[in-house]
Image 1 (cartoon, rainbow, N blue to C red):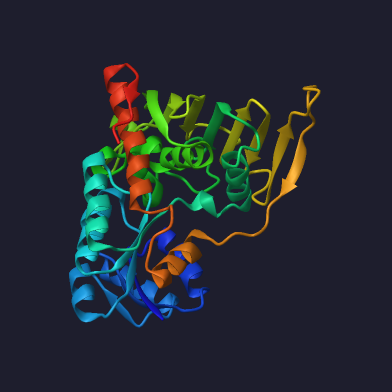
Image 2: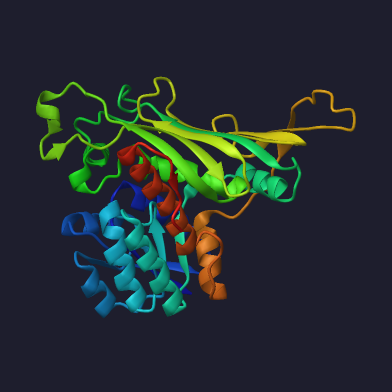
Length: 351
């Protein structure tokens, strides 16, 4: 039985609790939040025996095998490093850290400890993503030449998920001093991870960031100064030579939460649209005649969720490819993007 502790008891933590509760062989043993009352409510809702407002106290008093860290981005590094020092397996929300230096430190600490680690890039849960990755990596569309990847949200212009002006879970994501890397750090990490998962690592990035006026007095809501980026557009080069565009925004009216990746090779193409389906994708492959092929739908078999993958890794005693090393690589893409925007020039990925 894996005894799991959850650190951070906000909205996303409920998703972690729901998924881990459903996995045979995993027991939610404790939870922790800096807000003691919130931790208590979370424990009661998910029937967790112990709740704490200090992770150090939780580590000292509970015999845990693993932790799931579901806190603000700027706390990922100190909490993960503390858990690794306790000999625990660690699942961490994305992005892994807020700086590449912290991410590399976390990766190296995990390697030194021989610990199982996992970063929750949740769109790897999609069966179509896993199947398409297998097809592309296996040469099914030939040499990858061109990639289009986008992650579009609309919550700055629509109240589909609630009003960002009055919902703290959204407002902090607009404020750098509250640990946000903006849309680049929040959802850009997802779309970078998907592009690299499907097509291999990125070697160079040319990025532009945009932060737009939101029509509120003094550009702030309470303690939150609205200075984090809202949009980014990147031109990227893959290590194998292919080119691509990767972009994301929170201003995409009509797009609630839309992820799309199109991959074009010299012998075919793949079209993934998670709005259309998480269970199937489109593929077009060139025949001997090289006439324009038709698009065909490919159904993908069910795959384990990220939570199931982490539990399986803990039981086996070794991480899978969603580990801290991968999280550090994605952090390198974010760092290259911020640097490129600041210097107004393409940047090599430094990892």
